[in-house]
Image (cartoon, rainbow, N blue to C red; front, side, top):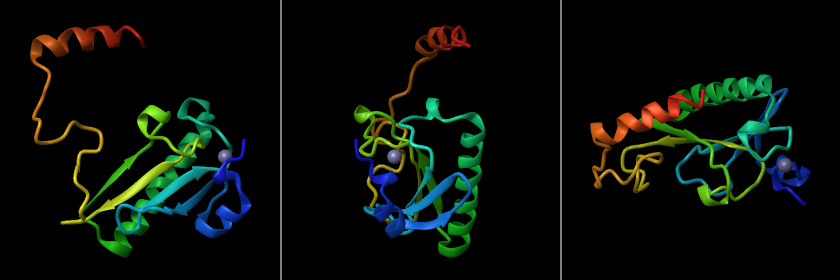
Length: 140
Ligand SMILES: [Zn+2]
């Protein structure tokens, strides 16, 4: 299987920073100015496969990139996140963390990437959330 994020030509074209464990790519298809990807050098598809020290390293690099983007672009906010699995929108099956600066009127329709559409205003009732909290406490 060929992986774009393990391909030297792509690494050479998109890398804006290289650390010990990561590459930071400028997104080939950015939704906003400055959108970057932090990509572990180790080829893994998802977060559960990355050794914990490398996950910590990845998040440290996310923080570093965020600080640089904040200083350089002065965005009003950021969206951060992983898409894992085709159903979740993962298109490159090599783990990567999106850093998307947000600006007033940046044209991105749904500001709540991890929420339902803000217009929906759908929230769980107390009766609905209580059993879910109890159920999910049991898995830890
Ligand atoms: Zn890869």
